[in-house]
Image 1 (spheres, rainbow, N blue to C red):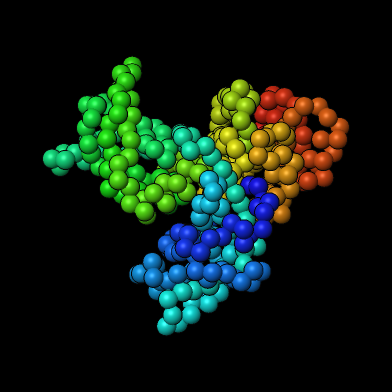
Image 2 (image 1 turned 60 degrees about the vertical axis):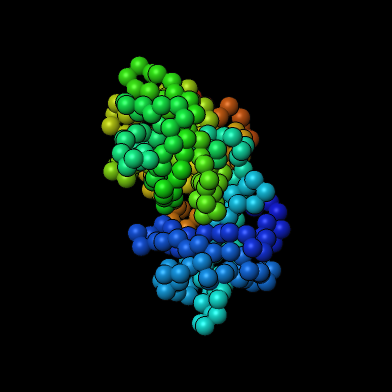
Length: 331
């Protein structure tokens, strides 16, 4: 995931909403809502305690956390830890970030996703649906018994990363028949400030985050925007019984690595947001990921091959067939 390329304090704004993700990689993790009260550059960030309510009692000094917020069209995630709960006061502090990550997205970009959800009509009737995509302005559903254009309803969306958007008001704006179901396009209506924050952070921080809680751990993660390459690697490996997951961006790749640790990572050398060599270097130096083998693939280039090996890659290959063979030998 790309490191922050501007000073941290330039991204902070007093009054901005944030979510403090406590122990995000642990089973007992939880999220606390807050606002930025101020900061001491290089030392700590002061956060409002008034929005934490019942969650505040769960905070403890030295808890690892990620401070998440949106600023100027970019989503930021800053690795930190709880410092001082300031007993009797209406704020608490977290350490100055040791690492910061940033992702930006076009406002109308749609996140592809597959998740079940229930739509509740005005008369209380519940209708099952399958969520297919979501953006800052609306979302798409697949339905067997579609809703009519103009129908107003409410829906709860359980999204990856702990983003549960509850009781969202929506209106059907278009209906399109498909082979065995109907696609229903919907727009959001009257989002609360809290709902708008969670939606904006989720959409902005990822372009494709699909996670099934019941799915087996991914054995191989491919970080690439080349769909033909992904398919060429996936087919022989899945025939051999290897579970393959794909991430179209570096941001999504690191999201998946944090979500469930793969046994092997394959990364494209040339990506829009970061080079495959740099991705390999970050994985090699990230606590908990040091032992995960990484393969880099790209055009034949002696310098690129040397850089990948220097960054800790276990191999550099130029074709999908070579990558699939190498993956099978490792897994």
